[in-house]
Image 1 (cartoon, rainbow, N blue to C red):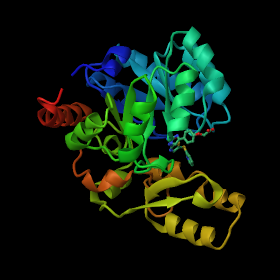
Image 2 (spheres, protein in one colour):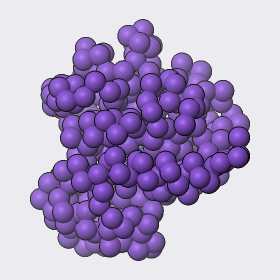
Image 3 (cartoon, rainbow, N blue to C red):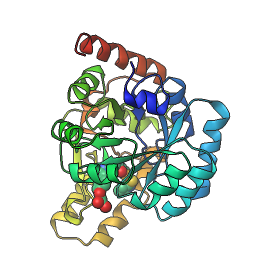
Amino acid sequence: MKTRITELLDIQFPIIQGGMAWVAEHHLAAAVSDAGGLGIIGAGGAPAEFVREQIRKVKEVTDKPFGVNLMLMNPEADAIAQVIIEEGVKVVTTGAGNPAKYTEMWKEAGVKVIPVVASVAMAKMMERAGADAVVAEGMESGGHIGAQTTMCLVPQVVDAVQIPVIAAGGIADGRGMAAAFMLGAEAVQMGTRFIVCRESVVHANYKNKILKAKDIDSEVTGTSHGHPVRQLRNNMTREYLKLEKEGASFEELEKLTLGALRKAVVDGDTINGTLMAGQIAGLVKKEQTCKEMIEEIMCEAMELLKGKE
Ligand code: TUI
């Protein structure tokens, strides 16, 4: 399948792996890129030199294009923005903020810039700043989210900008991909389904929570202080939401979540860890290799989209 995104990124399939903090490390990124999608290293809150090592490890095992996601709240964001250039990374996606201050230097270095946006206004601003494409991410997604749904956001962004749009949020199979294409998207970004893939180093306890999740099993914490985060319901979310309801301060709530994503991903602590996942977790029922997953999704989507162009 050819779209402006497959051409822009020189990839076989218009499937991009979300830049999930802790989850999107070098094994996963390399496996997705090797399978013909775009693998992404998620910088999350990691130090710049750690990100450099991750980039080098992907380059050691694959010649295929891959990207880095810069989470803009990372205190080392400036340094990571430089590392991306120094290491010759071809594609950068950004999340949780406005990457305007980096776009010029990335463009000059020939890096393709794809900000994740959660509104039409942000998409237009990113296009003006020189972005090559945008990811329009709905609030069905896991992790840090905006307020619009994928179904409403994607077609409005598609109408508002000339650059190609990648849909994200609530997509985990060929039906979701086909639906996104009907809304005008030219690729999809998926996170939750990739968490459970065989090459993902995420602890088995976390994977099992996703595999067993139902439609209603995610919860959004942090709305009261403007940092909404979607994750699977557990002791941590119950405690967090209770404190939030009682009017706890941002600092108090932060204390509760400090290191909690690592606890979930690395230690498999499903009780007090942060199990970031999208609403689509209820649809994710099996562990597969990235190649099996991508090929299955592509077959389903192509079948549904046949004759639609
Ligand atoms: O960034 C994400 N998802 C994330 S980042 C993350 S790391 C984290 N860890 C612990 C607590 C909180 C975060 C986990 N998940 N998705 C992309 C995304 N970006 N979603 C929404 C946005 C966004 C929101 C507002 C992008 C731009 C924006 O505009 C802000 C501005 O400055 O105008």
